[in-house]
Picture 1 (cartoon, rainbow, N blue to C red):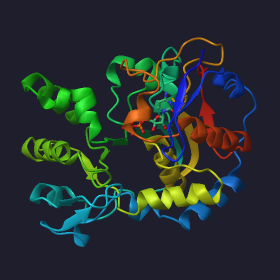
Picture 2 (picture 1 turned 90 degrees about the vertical axis):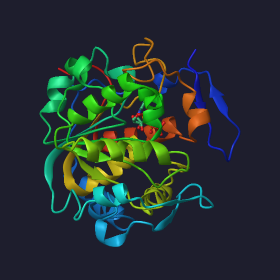
Picture 3 (picture 1 turned 30 degrees about the vertical axis):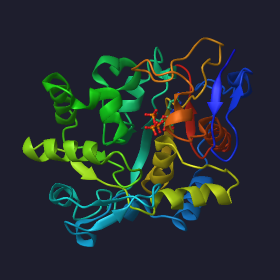
Picture 4 (picture 1 turned 180 degrees about the vertical axis):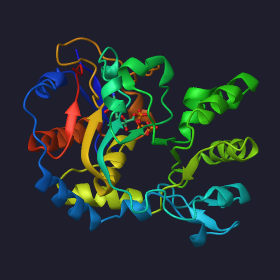
Length: 319
Ligand code: CTP
Protein backbone atom coordinates (compact mmCIF):
# COMPACT_ATOMS: atom_id res chain seq x y z
CA UNK A 1 0.00 0.00 0.00
CA UNK A 2 0.88 3.67 0.17
CA UNK A 3 3.88 4.56 2.25
CA UNK A 4 4.21 8.17 3.22
CA UNK A 5 6.67 8.85 5.99
CA UNK A 6 5.80 11.94 7.89
CA UNK A 7 8.52 12.98 10.24
CA UNK A 8 7.77 16.12 12.07
CA UNK A 9 10.59 15.80 14.61
CA UNK A 10 8.15 16.83 17.36
CA UNK A 11 6.29 13.56 16.88
CA UNK A 12 7.57 10.09 16.05
CA UNK A 13 7.74 9.09 12.38
CA UNK A 14 4.37 7.97 11.14
CA UNK A 15 4.15 5.48 8.35
CA UNK A 16 0.74 5.79 6.81
CA UNK A 17 -0.03 2.68 4.83
CA UNK A 18 -3.54 3.69 3.93
CA UNK A 19 -4.29 4.85 0.44
CA UNK A 20 -3.73 8.56 1.01
CA UNK A 21 -4.42 9.36 -2.60
CA UNK A 22 -8.03 8.26 -2.26
CA UNK A 23 -8.63 10.79 0.48
CA UNK A 24 -7.15 13.49 -1.68
CA UNK A 25 -9.19 12.90 -4.74
CA UNK A 26 -9.24 16.03 -6.86
CA UNK A 27 -11.59 16.39 -9.76
CA UNK A 28 -9.88 16.52 -13.15
CA UNK A 29 -8.87 19.94 -14.42
CA UNK A 30 -11.88 19.97 -16.71
CA UNK A 31 -14.33 20.19 -13.81
CA UNK A 32 -15.63 23.62 -12.99
CA UNK A 33 -12.94 25.30 -10.98
CA UNK A 34 -13.47 29.04 -10.60
CA UNK A 35 -10.90 31.59 -9.51
CA UNK A 36 -11.92 33.38 -6.34
CA UNK A 37 -10.39 36.82 -6.80
CA UNK A 38 -11.70 38.16 -3.50
CA UNK A 39 -10.16 35.30 -1.54
CA UNK A 40 -6.85 35.59 -3.40
CA UNK A 41 -6.60 39.25 -2.47
CA UNK A 42 -7.52 38.51 1.11
CA UNK A 43 -4.78 35.87 1.34
CA UNK A 44 -2.25 38.26 -0.18
CA UNK A 45 -3.14 40.84 2.44
CA UNK A 46 -2.87 38.36 5.30
CA UNK A 47 0.48 37.06 4.11
CA UNK A 48 1.75 40.63 3.83
CA UNK A 49 1.36 40.90 7.59
CA UNK A 50 4.07 38.26 7.94
CA UNK A 51 6.35 38.81 4.98
CA UNK A 52 6.77 40.82 1.83
CA UNK A 53 7.92 38.74 -1.11
CA UNK A 54 9.41 41.80 -2.71
CA UNK A 55 11.79 42.21 0.22
CA UNK A 56 12.13 38.70 1.58
CA UNK A 57 12.84 37.03 -1.72
CA UNK A 58 16.46 38.18 -1.39
CA UNK A 59 18.99 39.83 0.83
CA UNK A 60 20.22 42.96 -0.97
CA UNK A 61 23.75 44.25 -1.47
CA UNK A 62 23.20 47.28 0.70
CA UNK A 63 22.47 45.21 3.79
CA UNK A 64 25.60 43.02 3.92
CA UNK A 65 29.29 43.36 3.26
CA UNK A 66 32.03 40.79 2.68
CA UNK A 67 33.16 39.23 5.94
CA UNK A 68 29.86 39.74 7.74
CA UNK A 69 28.94 36.82 9.98
CA UNK A 70 25.59 35.09 9.45
CA UNK A 71 23.95 32.61 11.81
CA UNK A 72 22.16 29.85 9.93
CA UNK A 73 18.40 30.02 10.30
CA UNK A 74 18.03 26.38 11.33
CA UNK A 75 21.42 25.95 13.00
CA UNK A 76 21.72 29.10 15.07
CA UNK A 77 25.01 28.01 16.63
CA UNK A 78 26.74 27.67 13.30
CA UNK A 79 27.89 30.67 11.33
CA UNK A 80 29.19 31.53 7.89
CA UNK A 81 31.02 34.54 6.54
CA UNK A 82 29.75 36.48 3.57
CA UNK A 83 32.34 35.80 0.86
CA UNK A 84 33.41 38.27 -1.79
CA UNK A 85 31.68 36.15 -4.46
CA UNK A 86 28.43 35.95 -2.55
CA UNK A 87 28.53 39.69 -2.01
CA UNK A 88 29.05 40.29 -5.72
CA UNK A 89 26.06 38.16 -6.58
CA UNK A 90 23.63 39.82 -4.16
CA UNK A 91 21.07 41.84 -6.12
CA UNK A 92 21.02 45.62 -5.69
CA UNK A 93 17.26 45.75 -5.89
CA UNK A 94 14.62 43.10 -5.48
CA UNK A 95 14.31 40.93 -8.58
CA UNK A 96 10.53 41.20 -8.15
CA UNK A 97 10.34 44.91 -7.49
CA UNK A 98 7.01 46.26 -8.67
CA UNK A 99 6.13 43.05 -10.47
CA UNK A 100 2.54 41.90 -11.01
CA UNK A 101 1.72 38.94 -13.23
CA UNK A 102 -1.75 37.91 -14.43
CA UNK A 103 -0.97 34.22 -13.94
CA UNK A 104 1.85 32.18 -12.47
CA UNK A 105 2.69 28.50 -12.59
CA UNK A 106 4.48 26.83 -9.72
CA UNK A 107 5.89 23.52 -10.84
CA UNK A 108 6.57 20.99 -8.08
CA UNK A 109 8.68 17.95 -8.75
CA UNK A 110 6.26 15.08 -8.29
CA UNK A 111 6.25 12.22 -10.80
CA UNK A 112 2.54 12.92 -11.27
CA UNK A 113 3.68 15.23 -14.07
CA UNK A 114 4.90 12.30 -16.18
CA UNK A 115 2.47 11.65 -19.00
CA UNK A 116 0.40 14.70 -18.02
CA UNK A 117 1.03 16.59 -21.23
CA UNK A 118 0.96 19.78 -19.14
CA UNK A 119 4.08 21.30 -20.72
CA UNK A 120 2.36 23.59 -23.25
CA UNK A 121 -0.15 24.80 -20.66
CA UNK A 122 2.55 25.51 -18.07
CA UNK A 123 4.46 27.56 -20.64
CA UNK A 124 1.47 29.83 -21.27
CA UNK A 125 1.68 31.36 -17.77
CA UNK A 126 3.26 34.79 -17.51
CA UNK A 127 5.65 33.71 -14.75
CA UNK A 128 6.85 30.14 -14.25
CA UNK A 129 8.51 29.01 -11.03
CA UNK A 130 10.39 25.72 -10.78
CA UNK A 131 12.10 23.93 -7.94
CA UNK A 132 15.59 22.63 -7.33
CA UNK A 133 17.01 22.94 -10.83
CA UNK A 134 14.75 20.14 -12.00
CA UNK A 135 15.55 19.21 -15.62
CA UNK A 136 13.11 20.39 -18.29
CA UNK A 137 14.46 19.66 -21.79
CA UNK A 138 13.94 15.88 -21.68
CA UNK A 139 10.48 16.31 -20.12
CA UNK A 140 9.21 19.37 -21.93
CA UNK A 141 5.97 17.76 -23.11
CA UNK A 142 4.94 17.21 -19.49
CA UNK A 143 6.62 20.06 -17.62
CA UNK A 144 7.27 22.77 -20.23
CA UNK A 145 10.48 24.74 -20.51
CA UNK A 146 9.67 28.36 -19.61
CA UNK A 147 11.49 29.24 -16.41
CA UNK A 148 11.38 32.65 -14.80
CA UNK A 149 12.55 31.60 -11.36
CA UNK A 150 14.15 28.38 -10.27
CA UNK A 151 15.17 27.43 -6.74
CA UNK A 152 18.30 25.57 -5.79
CA UNK A 153 18.71 24.08 -2.34
CA UNK A 154 22.45 23.53 -1.80
CA UNK A 155 21.72 19.80 -1.40
CA UNK A 156 20.84 19.66 -5.11
CA UNK A 157 24.53 19.93 -5.94
CA UNK A 158 25.09 16.71 -4.05
CA UNK A 159 21.88 14.96 -5.08
CA UNK A 160 21.79 15.78 -8.76
CA UNK A 161 25.34 16.81 -9.62
CA UNK A 162 27.48 14.35 -7.60
CA UNK A 163 29.08 17.20 -5.65
CA UNK A 164 30.92 18.15 -8.85
CA UNK A 165 33.45 15.36 -8.30
CA UNK A 166 34.78 15.54 -11.84
CA UNK A 167 34.71 17.61 -15.01
CA UNK A 168 31.67 15.77 -16.38
CA UNK A 169 29.48 16.84 -13.47
CA UNK A 170 30.87 20.37 -13.44
CA UNK A 171 30.05 20.59 -17.13
CA UNK A 172 26.55 19.26 -16.52
CA UNK A 173 25.84 21.90 -13.90
CA UNK A 174 27.37 24.58 -16.08
CA UNK A 175 25.07 23.61 -18.95
CA UNK A 176 22.03 23.69 -16.69
CA UNK A 177 22.97 27.14 -15.38
CA UNK A 178 23.61 28.45 -18.90
CA UNK A 179 20.19 27.19 -19.96
CA UNK A 180 18.55 29.43 -17.34
CA UNK A 181 19.17 32.28 -19.68
CA UNK A 182 18.48 35.34 -17.56
CA UNK A 183 15.97 33.87 -15.11
CA UNK A 184 16.15 34.20 -11.35
CA UNK A 185 18.20 31.57 -9.52
CA UNK A 186 16.99 31.44 -5.92
CA UNK A 187 19.49 29.91 -3.52
CA UNK A 188 18.60 29.44 0.16
CA UNK A 189 22.18 29.92 1.33
CA UNK A 190 21.51 30.89 4.92
CA UNK A 191 19.12 28.16 6.01
CA UNK A 192 21.10 25.12 7.15
CA UNK A 193 24.78 24.54 7.79
CA UNK A 194 26.48 22.07 5.52
CA UNK A 195 25.67 23.72 2.22
CA UNK A 196 28.37 26.36 2.41
CA UNK A 197 30.86 24.83 -0.03
CA UNK A 198 28.12 23.94 -2.48
CA UNK A 199 26.82 27.49 -2.57
CA UNK A 200 30.36 28.77 -2.98
CA UNK A 201 31.03 26.42 -5.92
CA UNK A 202 27.92 27.62 -7.69
CA UNK A 203 28.68 31.27 -7.01
CA UNK A 204 32.18 30.77 -8.35
CA UNK A 205 30.95 29.07 -11.52
CA UNK A 206 28.42 31.83 -12.18
CA UNK A 207 31.04 34.55 -11.88
CA UNK A 208 33.83 32.71 -13.66
CA UNK A 209 31.67 31.79 -16.65
CA UNK A 210 29.66 35.00 -16.60
CA UNK A 211 26.47 33.00 -16.52
CA UNK A 212 23.40 35.01 -17.34
CA UNK A 213 21.24 34.45 -14.23
CA UNK A 214 19.85 36.83 -11.64
CA UNK A 215 20.84 35.36 -8.30
CA UNK A 216 18.69 35.80 -5.20
CA UNK A 217 19.32 34.58 -1.65
CA UNK A 218 16.23 34.51 0.57
CA UNK A 219 16.19 36.65 3.67
CA UNK A 220 16.93 35.29 7.13
CA UNK A 221 13.40 35.94 8.28
CA UNK A 222 11.54 34.31 5.38
CA UNK A 223 11.23 30.80 6.79
CA UNK A 224 9.92 31.90 10.17
CA UNK A 225 7.56 34.36 8.56
CA UNK A 226 6.12 31.73 6.23
CA UNK A 227 5.74 29.30 9.09
CA UNK A 228 4.10 32.02 11.15
CA UNK A 229 1.53 32.72 8.46
CA UNK A 230 0.56 29.06 8.10
CA UNK A 231 0.52 28.54 11.86
CA UNK A 232 -2.03 31.29 12.31
CA UNK A 233 -4.09 29.41 9.75
CA UNK A 234 -3.75 26.26 11.81
CA UNK A 235 -1.39 24.54 9.42
CA UNK A 236 1.41 23.35 11.67
CA UNK A 237 4.45 23.12 9.48
CA UNK A 238 7.87 22.67 11.01
CA UNK A 239 9.80 23.46 7.87
CA UNK A 240 7.88 24.54 4.78
CA UNK A 241 8.87 22.82 1.55
CA UNK A 242 10.24 24.77 -1.35
CA UNK A 243 6.88 24.40 -3.08
CA UNK A 244 4.92 25.94 -0.23
CA UNK A 245 7.49 28.73 0.11
CA UNK A 246 7.02 29.52 -3.57
CA UNK A 247 3.23 29.60 -3.28
CA UNK A 248 3.45 31.89 -0.25
CA UNK A 249 5.81 34.26 -2.09
CA UNK A 250 3.82 34.11 -5.31
CA UNK A 251 0.65 35.43 -3.66
CA UNK A 252 2.37 38.83 -3.59
CA UNK A 253 2.95 39.23 -7.31
CA UNK A 254 0.64 36.75 -9.05
CA UNK A 255 -3.03 37.29 -9.68
CA UNK A 256 -3.83 33.67 -10.48
CA UNK A 257 -1.66 30.85 -9.16
CA UNK A 258 -1.66 27.44 -10.75
CA UNK A 259 0.19 24.52 -9.14
CA UNK A 260 1.47 21.53 -11.10
CA UNK A 261 3.52 18.57 -9.85
CA UNK A 262 2.33 18.76 -6.26
CA UNK A 263 1.45 15.22 -5.26
CA UNK A 264 3.29 13.77 -2.27
CA UNK A 265 1.70 10.32 -2.53
CA UNK A 266 2.97 7.11 -4.11
CA UNK A 267 -0.28 6.33 -5.93
CA UNK A 268 -2.18 8.63 -8.24
CA UNK A 269 -5.94 9.18 -8.26
CA UNK A 270 -6.40 6.06 -10.36
CA UNK A 271 -4.27 4.07 -7.90
CA UNK A 272 -1.35 3.88 -10.32
CA UNK A 273 2.19 4.25 -8.92
CA UNK A 274 3.69 7.75 -9.01
CA UNK A 275 7.40 8.53 -8.81
CA UNK A 276 8.47 10.84 -5.99
CA UNK A 277 10.31 13.04 -8.51
CA UNK A 278 9.57 13.09 -12.22
CA UNK A 279 13.25 13.03 -13.09
CA UNK A 280 15.13 10.79 -10.66
CA UNK A 281 14.76 7.65 -8.59
CA UNK A 282 14.42 9.16 -5.11
CA UNK A 283 11.93 7.21 -3.04
CA UNK A 284 9.11 8.24 -0.73
CA UNK A 285 10.37 8.50 2.79
CA UNK A 286 13.54 10.16 1.62
CA UNK A 287 12.18 13.35 3.18
CA UNK A 288 12.11 11.77 6.63
CA UNK A 289 15.88 11.78 7.01
CA UNK A 290 16.77 14.79 4.96
CA UNK A 291 14.29 17.30 6.27
CA UNK A 292 11.32 17.38 8.56
CA UNK A 293 8.89 18.22 5.76
CA UNK A 294 5.25 17.40 6.19
CA UNK A 295 4.20 17.38 2.56
CA UNK A 296 0.88 15.58 2.95
CA UNK A 297 -0.14 18.15 5.56
CA UNK A 298 0.83 20.98 3.22
CA UNK A 299 -1.02 19.27 0.42
CA UNK A 300 -4.19 19.18 2.48
CA UNK A 301 -3.95 22.93 3.02
CA UNK A 302 -3.34 23.54 -0.69
CA UNK A 303 -6.24 21.30 -1.61
CA UNK A 304 -8.56 23.33 0.59
CA UNK A 305 -7.38 26.50 -1.15
CA UNK A 306 -8.00 24.81 -4.50
CA UNK A 307 -11.55 24.01 -3.48
CA UNK A 308 -12.06 27.61 -2.40
CA UNK A 309 -10.71 28.91 -5.70
CA UNK A 310 -7.65 30.67 -4.26
CA UNK A 311 -5.30 28.54 -6.34
CA UNK A 312 -5.61 25.83 -8.92
CA UNK A 313 -4.06 22.40 -8.45
CA UNK A 314 -3.58 20.11 -11.40
CA UNK A 315 -2.77 16.54 -10.37
CA UNK A 316 -3.64 14.68 -13.54
CA UNK A 317 -3.55 15.24 -17.27
CA UNK A 318 -3.90 18.63 -18.91
CA UNK A 319 -6.38 19.05 -21.72
N1 CTP B 1 6.45 18.08 -4.27
C1 CTP B 1 5.23 17.42 -4.10
N2 CTP B 1 5.16 16.07 -4.25
C2 CTP B 1 6.25 15.34 -4.55
C3 CTP B 1 7.51 15.99 -4.71
C4 CTP B 1 7.56 17.37 -4.56
O1 CTP B 1 4.23 18.07 -3.80
N3 CTP B 1 6.14 14.03 -4.70
C5 CTP B 1 6.50 19.56 -4.19
C6 CTP B 1 6.91 20.05 -2.80
O2 CTP B 1 6.21 21.23 -2.49
C7 CTP B 1 8.38 20.35 -2.99
C8 CTP B 1 8.44 20.80 -4.45
O3 CTP B 1 7.45 20.03 -5.10
O4 CTP B 1 8.86 21.36 -2.14
C9 CTP B 1 9.80 20.59 -5.09
O5 CTP B 1 10.20 19.26 -4.92
P1 CTP B 1 11.62 18.91 -4.28
O6 CTP B 1 12.68 19.34 -5.19
O7 CTP B 1 11.61 17.49 -3.86
O8 CTP B 1 11.61 19.92 -3.01
P2 CTP B 1 11.95 19.79 -1.48
O9 CTP B 1 11.61 18.42 -0.94
O10 CTP B 1 11.36 20.95 -0.76
O11 CTP B 1 13.47 19.93 -1.44
P3 CTP B 1 14.42 19.48 -0.26
O12 CTP B 1 14.14 18.03 0.03
O13 CTP B 1 15.78 19.72 -0.85
O14 CTP B 1 14.05 20.39 0.88
